[in-house]
Image 1 (cartoon, rainbow, N blue to C red):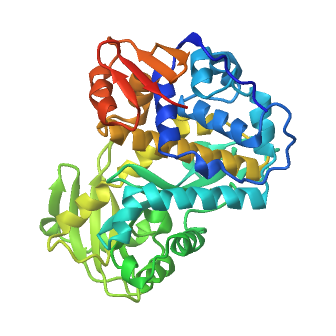
Image 2: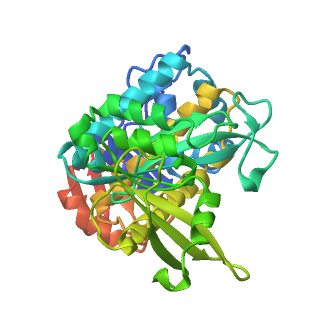
Length: 436
């Protein structure tokens, strides 16, 4: 069992904003996805759930590696008081907890996470209401040691010959919500797990054919082979995807007269081509010409779409260009939340770490929305809101979190607190009091 905190104490913290997030998570019951996960671990001082909570809290702080837990966070008394502990679990205990994950416990963690998402996600709520929703899917690599399970030599240009694992992310740009994450061996290509990912989502969230008709998948060329796109269209989804073959697009472009290209922006032009012969569903096809960033000349690609919204091709090209949102999200998960630098030898342990990182991101997104700070990126939100100095005091009524009134976004927090699910907020002292 964890050591209980003293009844009355006053502790400084460098993470007053994170302590406030933790209070909000408890009140909103957003930590229940960690309940009843079967892990074969002994409970001496800390339960497996408490160690997972400590790890989740550390992930929210944006630590680059698990080793920084001992150096930067474990002895932050104010933060540990907010979690109801005398100290956080050390890095070795958290690492052992991740190593204890197997197929059963991993399945329970994902199932719990999906249950929470079904209740809280604005993107999934929109799908449930039958409203048009755009989902992006992309794959990225995670460098790892050759001794790690599932490590293979990567295919991406930047890591030729280096051993990696592959990571797939499902993302909704409208609400900035990552909806699921999957780990694959390093030799997996983008289109390989497409069917299994989508069928898994359909089963988890009950996406029958009527709901699929309002879901639009926006995909890059890795998913743009003719069989994959035909399969998606036959299942009733709307699709806006870049075709797999750049050679096909370049061959088509040779027969297009210069005056037939329609400008989209200073770097791009488009031409509507005949349908792709191998795609079995009704669709439109657009050849896109893009000026090279360096030197002269152009690169060519094509879009295959079955979404009937815009008459002019420009609307489809602009819509596809918005797909850069998932690329930024992947970079935030890898760099800001540090998944790129956190490596587990166990494949199941790494998958569990990826799911916890996804959940840390999601809960920060939900808290950021509660504050009305959706415009902030995760990196700036952690720096300016979570990593703020303050004081945590234990009282008979609960914990008092005092935030200095000179920190960024103090006025925003002050305006939010009176209507938040916390019992008391003192405007004069900048103090939030809640019962834990």
